[in-house]
Image (cartoon, rainbow, N blue to C red; front, side, top):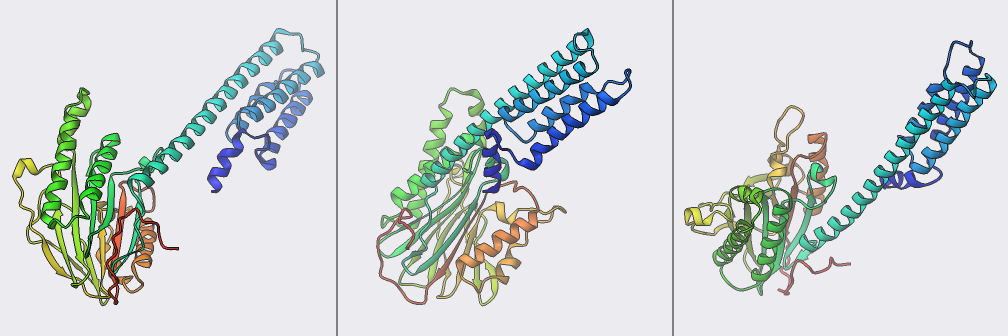
Length: 391
């Protein structure tokens, strides 16, 4: 909020009394020193420092006002030294006016760019909420928490990244997907929307988990085919690098198990009694979008998921985050340390600790989901991830 407030003040008439006093003092000091200096010493050209300094923190109106004071100060020097009508002082005044005008134009361009960035952020945040709907805090017997953060390199203009997740309810189970689109720019956003739309359309059906993944593979393959038909040559070159790693889970209400199919995605962590274990499937499938190249077999693997257990799903932006020494984030160790406080506290601890570990901008998108099976089985209610959070 503080940074946003600072940007808004750039176009106002009060950029900050303390900072505004500096260029005014500079004008007074430089003009006085020039007038009191010997005739062969000319300090007047230094007055350009005042509007140049003002442009660093203020908008075009304040910069223009300070420039007028600087020009007035230079004119006063010419009058006091009785050289106002000489060619030298006239050239100095003209140069000061020209450079000041350029500074005002620079401030106007910067201010327009700032307004455009604010509009882009507003649109991207709205689009992100539509594509990545907030997950409910409870579905069936499950308590759910989630965290999402786009890479800082992308976040300068947009909050939409390539990581994705969604949940949906069937009559007697909860289905969930977490994934990572391998691509860049608008292409990754379109793939994210395509896959999430396909999941939400099909996940609530009673079809077996393998059939759901086959449907998702077909949807992604169709999207890539549509993309490949585009006439843009640059996009055609990118198609071979586009696919989606994903983990698709089905968690029954009446059994303490998890059924999972992994399509090249990092394995989840099961947290139980302060220990973390990796859930590796028996037969991993290739990432979605590459099925036509290897004729995959989608075979679910079943894991125990007892009441009180925590399940942590994440993208490689978490497990592959590096510190200043290029060491990977020790996710398994840290997750086990904070496994006793429930899903939301676990993710909060991990998010804070990850930021400290990286110690700077995030190079990749980060998505995490934590699930806890409640001790009491709740009635199976039909819900989708668009449900509002309970108040």
